[in-house]
Length: 360
Image 1 (cartoon, rainbow, N blue to C red):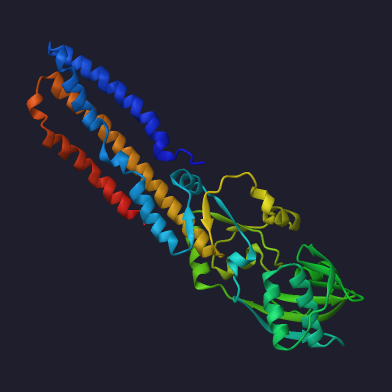
Image 2 (image 1 turned 90 degrees about the vertical axis):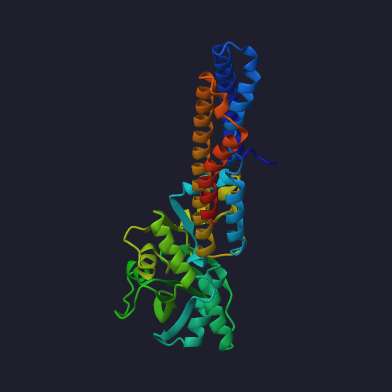
């Protein structure tokens, strides 16, 4: 069902007020001249300027330009009302595939610690990350296929703060960050960085996996745009390597820009039923922070353009009503030819036209 948009709602308020003013002022002006029959002429003159062109074109032209721009990104905004809702966005929820889409994570090296082979370490890590549905699992699975390694079956995979736990075969396996290892009382080498993963088998450190996260150009620009629009990021990433500190470092963002809930909060945010019942404000057909921020940027432009156009048009209509009333009241009807009224309407439409052209 189509709902009234911003311009429709505004028109429902503006139209009765403008008509009431036109009737009252026309009656006052005609009776002041001593010619009540001039009411209809005065009323027609007042209503001619009470409906400025900019009010009729406050949304359509700007929406056309925005829709054309978003089409290239595979996205669309539902309307001016939804654009106004998106304009008030303060926090953006980002998953790991928004920050690091497919192809932006590389496996650098695998180091065996103990008797387990590097192939078996990769097999264990691939099993856990794939079963957990991590974007990282695609990278490890591709590396395993390249070396003809068959991942084992991971059972009872659980997400903990900083890693994953599971049973693989007869072994209890933990894959996680250095912070998780320290909390478990495991001694780890000092050369690891924030994106290094450690693999435990039966509470023994057996492997170290070094990864490289490479922000894409589009994602980097999207994160910088988010900062310029004074938005903060909520990291809803199941990838335990993706933390607020890591995101701020990789994308050169200020400290405190990103926040992250606990694993239960991440699952709640990623649950499809989390937004159940909310009216959709936009449609995106591509993953990544780039198209998402493009929608928010265009929504901000569209909402601003509609608001400015409505403000100018309202002022033009009310100011025009007062001017026509004054001239009729002073019995200066000769100053109101049709050409002057049309010129007045066109002059006030020019800034609205420029605003709509800027909304791209």
